[in-house]
Length: 350
Image (cartoon, rainbow, N blue to C red; front, side, top):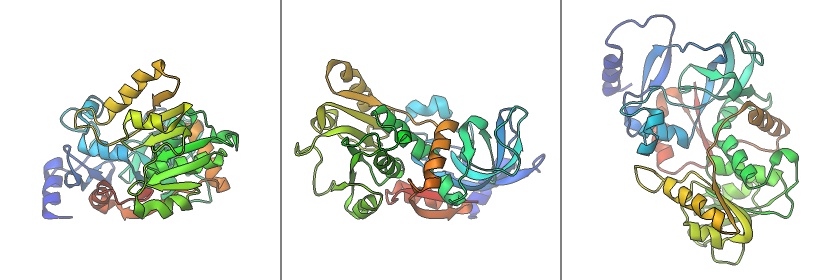
């Protein structure tokens, strides 16, 4: 821990002993780049009657956590906290063992191995709603399980919005699917889930990540630095625009006459609304054209997590982990993530 980090920790706790059980955690007193993150000891979270206390073995780093750390776009501050984060411990994904259960919890018992979403998962313990957890498959590690929930659930919801349901087996044979951002967290699952549904999948990625997308099972891979996907040579039934920023007109040129574009993510568009302007324009246009344009927001539900657990157990999908970092190196992990170097996912081990 650096001198600056120690000073932050000292200010945070005012040199007073913390009441009750404590834990190691990554905390932030304000919004900003990775430098706002530092390790500290904080009180262990209490749980509500519908929550589970999870001893965290691994957590996942995703774009949502980046938004929570930076506080961008500003339009999300009413949810996260206006001047400072409502929860000073970042992190959404987790995998670990059940330490305690609330009075109304029925699906889990102490000692169960679980994965899902929790509050402040960059810590030794996290409180998670029962409705956002599932049992961890035995054939994957905690690190692998921890990078599934947010990204894979978002990919699953996006595919369903496009009329593709991986839970029904190869029911989408002959459907042409384009996935932008195919090498990222959500994209890496979208490619695998679309293939599990029987679709013909084309992934879009940078030169350095083409091989990775091909290894995920994509039928075709477009290197966006060498070739555009909107040249009219191929039109797609479904486009999943994941963390991409093509214009609405460009998406439409790449769709069949009755095709559908599902937009999620996207990191450009300014600090106030991010990519929301483009998404809202697409949704507003959709009722007036034959093609369908929509946007989705990822959520994590037990039923979807259980479906994903089955696919993981069967080997149908496999988490693509690029790097793992120990808890104390979360700031370094965030810098690496923000630089755009990650292929697939980053895991945090506790």
